[in-house]
Image (cartoon, rainbow, N blue to C red; front, side, top):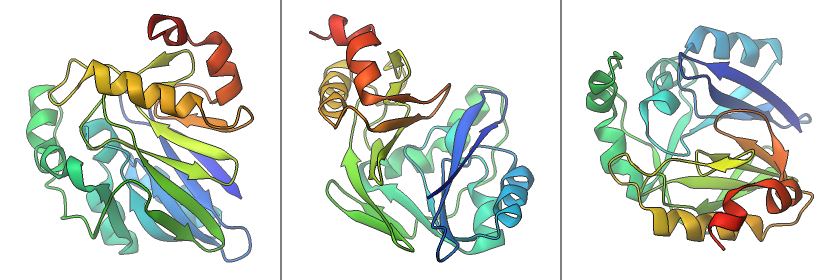
Amino acid sequence: MIIRVLGVGPLEANCFILGDENSAKAMVIDPGDEPDRIMDAVRAGGLSVEQIVCTHAHFDHVGAVPDLKKETNAKIVLHQDELEMYRAAKDMAAFWGYALEPLPEPDLLVKEGDELRTGSLLFRVLHTPGHSPGGICLFGEGVVVTGDTLFAGSVGRTDFHGGDMSRLKRSFERLLALPPETRVLAGHGPDSTIGRERSENVFSKLFA
């Protein structure tokens, strides 16, 4: 599996490009900003983007969706409980002083247990609310893409609209139950492993 990580935008959100080496098909996860840079990485890898997946709809994770949709015509994928947040992303960005283009409607609304395929790659959708109502993680191929649910050493904040600490706690515990060798690809900051987060994440004690 091809994994490219780009820290994009002023908040340095991690945009992931996951590609199948055999078919050169790929998905882009959380294109928050800098669409030209993202597309340069896609082209450099000789990849064809099939899906644009949003782990959640905060503006720093969806800002480049309109441009990527125009460039690739890939399917925009979002959890069904995140649609309200997605449609409000432009206003949220404006509140924080950022301009955001209107977002195209999603092509596919997913739920817990759905599967996303890209070439030979297969990922299961985990509904992990708490940071946002329809936050998702993608689990498969030895990795879990966690958006802003789980970071290396921390978790996502819950003081935004739709945040819920009790739901985040349950989502956090669920992620820590994944195999310890699973590589964690988080929405901000460095990668980690589930095993490392079990032993080192401060919230494993705070949530106990």
